[in-house]
Length: 296
Image (cartoon, rainbow, N blue to C red; front, side):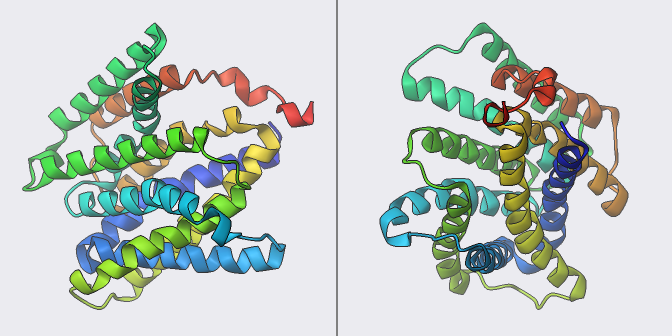
């Protein structure tokens, strides 16, 4: 991996890790629906501007249903579920629970294709469950009112990402940027009509407004551009490393900026979940130093 690719990988991990920080800040003030409506609308507008500048067609008529399915399960639903969870859960805990998405994807894939999990994947699944149990059982924040529901919502969000992953494997091939752009407009189409039923309880101050802007433009729009550039430069297998780094940055931002406690269970639980995810996905550190097929 070149120094430039390593820098992009770290930047992407830091950005996606920060998304849980911004949701933790914004959800209690604006409410989950208004927060995520702002996120997906800003991301869609940003990607539309980039699409015009790069002359990348959206082809919305031909791919409308595809964008709707992807936008629902890969953006609208998980974003909204995490935002509801953010009213009670810490940014650190949400970032770690998010790392279970590949584990859910493996389980869903096994059920979808009616094939048994390999011994390696089964071990990874067991570790993932054990890591989550360790986090939940010893984290003081789980004693708050509504925390059990928040944990269930965060895991449901990760489950939704697992559905999106399996759908994308069997879906028609669409150019990656168009997938990101189209799915964000689809997510906006799903969430914005909900705003009259859940308006923000208060106008945001400058800090919250900037958090929403960061969620939409940086954590969604710019993050997608970095991710697709990484896949092109180092291949999908190496780009998967971001899955393991996001919880690290999520915990770091939560501790440094929000003062969230960093207990032994947080570190141990995160490590166990990450190892479980690596086993399920078959990830090996050696893939970081392998050249992608397109560059061979």
